[in-house]
Image (cartoon, rainbow, N blue to C red; front, side, top):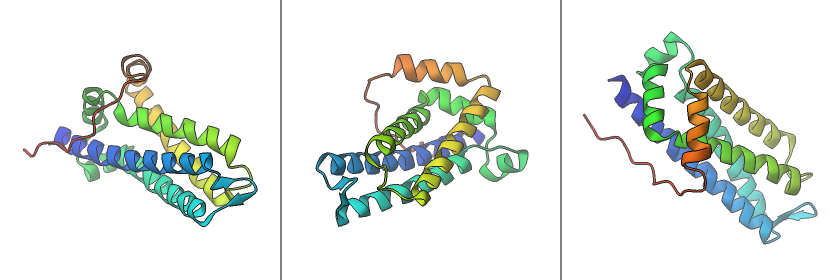
Length: 171
C-alpha cells in the first residue's frame, strides 16, 4: 500500500531530522560555552561539528530518497507523490518544519559563529542539504501543497511543541 509506505518513509525522515536537530542544538550549546569560537575549537567542539556535518549529509540523502522525482523512483520507494502528499497533510508537514528550522539555524549560526571555524567541505554539505530542501519545496509547489504547507507550519504549529514521531501501525 502506497500510503503505508509513505507513512513509514515519513517516520524514518522525521527520525533523521530529529537527530540533525539534536546535533545542531549540541553545537549551539558548545558555542554558548565557548568550546567553539573563531579563536579556538576544543576537541569536543570539533567532534560535535564533525557529527553535525555527518548528520547533515545523512539528512540530505534521506530527503532525496524520501521525495520520488520520477516514475522509476515511485516504483522503487513504493508510493507516488500524491500518496506522499496525503501523508504530509495528515502529519501537519512536521518534516518541512524541521527542515526549515534546521536550515535557518545553520544559516544564522554559520554566519554569526562559525566563520573561519568550518571548512569548505562543511559548507558544501550544508549547500547540498539546502538544495535537497529546495527540491522538496519545488515538488510541494508542483502538487499545489506549498501554500497549505506554509500556512500549516507558520500559523497552525508556529511556536508549538510537536509530538514525537511514531512509527506507522503495521497493516
